[in-house]
Length: 260
Length: 108
Image (cartoon, rainbow over all chains, first blue to last red; front, top):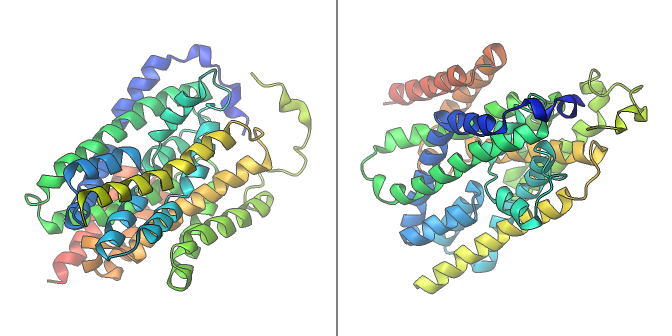
């Protein structure tokens, strides 16, 4: 666990890491976000939103499940209150992802204005968060922040571009191709969960991934919250048993306190 | 629905999401480092993300709803097995696409 802080940020080329983030985003990540936003744009268009509203939603909401909930519930004739509740529930994980992202990238202790932290976290999406989770401990926190900025900016840019182009492009791409892309994207995110650095987070993904769809038919969107909290808590309670290497019971000495 | 009401819906969706992000930065700035709380928050976030993604696999909306659940589950199984075996994202995703497209073609 202490790997990250033991790495020396002075030895890392932060600009190079930012470029690496940009380069790593080119390929599956931006292709997947682009295609998904094309998919969102198709739903938004069908629901009666114009292109500027679709693009504003992607840029300012920037959370796919909430965006889809907004457009599809509106299409189904739901009230504004229902739409708001569904979006808030579908995107509630943002809270946890932001707290986790701030810890991963050391943004918590970064000498940076509060609004800048908020602006950086506005770029955080599932793709970029799960992606950097795979590099935890591989770079210093400062290094990971640089990497995140390059990676997340590209994903954000292509997400908004995908929404704009998607508004018109859906007629040129066959439904079959779009269906394959949209069906595979959640699996791509799930593969990054399988690949998470911390073993407990992989188990958390397994528990949450089973609990949510099992409870969803009974309690709807609340299943996300229940699956997340129960799944995550179960893993934390059993962490010493699930991952004895990282969470050995004897390791409670305060000698690692003097980091940096 | 008129254009203004649609902008209102967009605004509500923005508030419904941005509030979480903002609260995240406020809490993230204060939470003790390496505490059991930060482990818990990470674990719950992973469980929620996996949960939301599994909902898209099991109960899809839009275009994907026209596909069979068996195609999606088999594609996911192929991806998970290959990912655990090879740790190679591209190969795992390629396997999922292959399985899904094959099932789609066989069903016609």
